[in-house]
Length: 206
Image 1 (cartoon, rainbow, N blue to C red):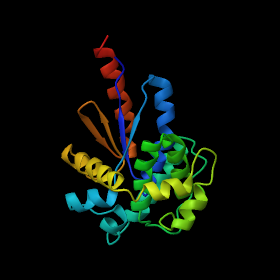
Image 2: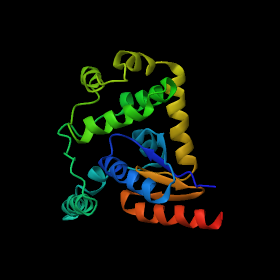
Image 3: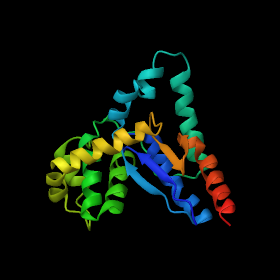
């Protein structure tokens, strides 16, 4: 049986975007399909007492500069050609992440994920603005008005809250987080370990 790795993500994380760009290569090499799980990063921070790296490290001399360097190294290593800092960062992703849950329920999750990451980190927009949201999702297969309306439904709100709480219950404290079975990995730089764990579980199942 092929492992079912999980990718817990919030569009507001640039590192989640970069992981998203690398995941297809891992899927191709291993044959394992990642399950994308939308969570609210702000909710995870609140539940765990965590803060974003920008907040946590801004007063530490040389740390922010190193983090920027590390991102550039990752981009070069994986030949990622489409990435731009979002000038509106940090963006409140509540609407975006509720929209992701709505897109799951509406059967348009994959194109929604592509559009969400694209307009946060490739053609950056202020995605907590409903008009920017509507403009970004004006792509084939997505009904932005329908998703905006659906994102306000209580079942969607409750589902995102439940996914976020479940993530914390399983050990999550930030994004991107990955699970391969019960094994948890945090951060884009652990994707190599994620792949190793997928292969190890595949070999063990033979």
